[in-house]
Image 1 (cartoon, rainbow, N blue to C red):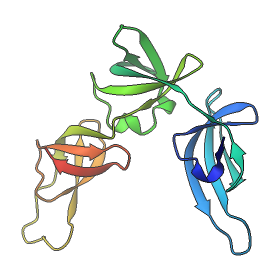
Image 2: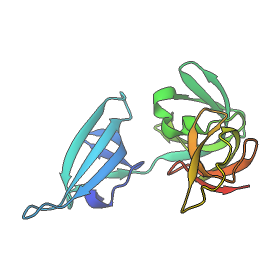
Image 3: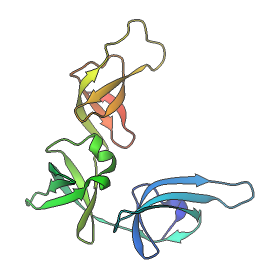
Image 4: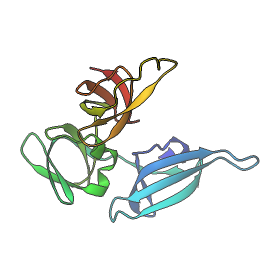
Length: 184
């Protein structure tokens, strides 16, 4: 059992007899009122979404899901197909992929998350290396502070990079925040 205040995005909780994945949590503390946690949830069984407010000290069951290291194979509309080391294929629905779509590349490794034997989502590594496919040239003289310019990677995802990064450079991106980490 965990209290609502300790639940983070990505955790899976039981609510009303159904498993829900937490998409977003927002902790707030009122003046005289007790602290509350607003959670945006999505059902693992039927993909319906909801938003519920819990007291910060409400107790709830957290479910530990099975995870398996897999490699991305191909897209079969509307499913993304992943394969493990024993060549078993698992399909994850497009709407359950979340932010992973921004970084997806054929042959990419990730953890596929299972609930009762069904593949439900994907957890990416904390950082990925990608090639910059487009970016504007640096503006001469613009060096005050932390200056960022837009850059696109092969998937079309746009990330802010420092002015010294050029088209064709390989960069490391933090998949949790979607921010540039360093040039590789």
